[in-house]
Image (cartoon, rainbow, N blue to C red; front, side, top):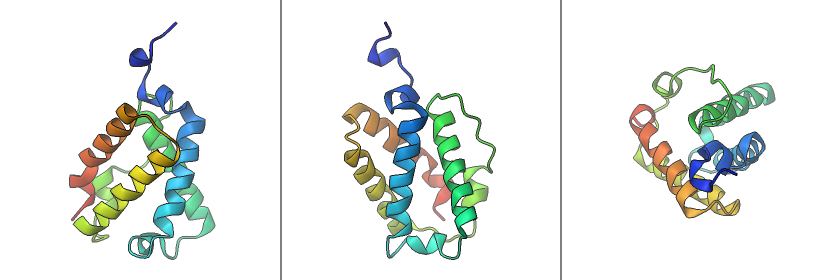
Length: 125
């Protein structure tokens, strides 16, 4: 039997189903936020479904899962949106709240938040 430390982050987060549920919760949080929800304003339901699937694939691949992310790199995807440091803080607060909602253990929560932090330079202008 594989110990918890030997499992990929993908497995420790509950695999595809766990990541999909987390992304759904997270998107509900950020799209309804009065400050950062504007970044999704005007997206059709179809666009939101595509965004959701891209995020799920990105996180599954990044956490060691069997998915392949076919989207653009983070810099290209966010360039020109004008995302600033206060927006980033709100994003990270929602990410932490989502992880807490799903009772993600501290180690995995730290790994996820550290991964998101590693993307900040490509997202915040």
